[in-house]
Length: 189
Image 1 (cartoon, rainbow, N blue to C red):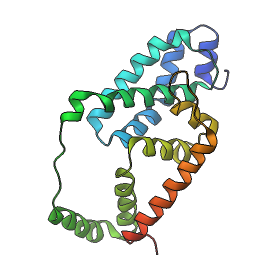
Image 2 (image 1 turned 180 degrees about the vertical axis):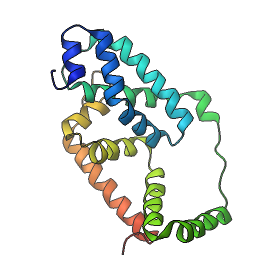
Image 3 (image 1 turned 90 degrees about the vertical axis):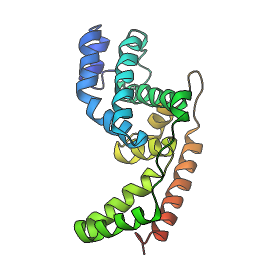
């Protein structure tokens, strides 16, 4: 468990200091992850608050079976999943953008941002079309560099495991889908 400062504090029984270290050391990464999968700053902030509560409540039962960083992402993922399953939230309806708004965005992107920035924005828009599960897979594996075992640990439901080979296959299909979408949008040649 002594993979980092937070892990060392937790192992030494300094739970409050360990919780503070988790939030200070991994909080910005986790908030960024939540923002990317929830696609809304307010929702991400709300789920981040829930994550910190879950962290505090769960810390005494942390068994050290995985690195603290992976456990923190697991808590964040489960808090986000609860948020997404919330019946009140599911009744809400996002405003649909019109075709004209999409075209206006394209013009602004290409003229004001330049080709490189427009391409990155296009990639961001493609990623925004992914489900939270798919976003999680991309963020944890590509952006955060977690191993397949660590990603499987984060995504596992309580008492169940996630097959690493199945995750890799899902990731390959996701990459193929993103490449196809990017070609359709003119981001790849």
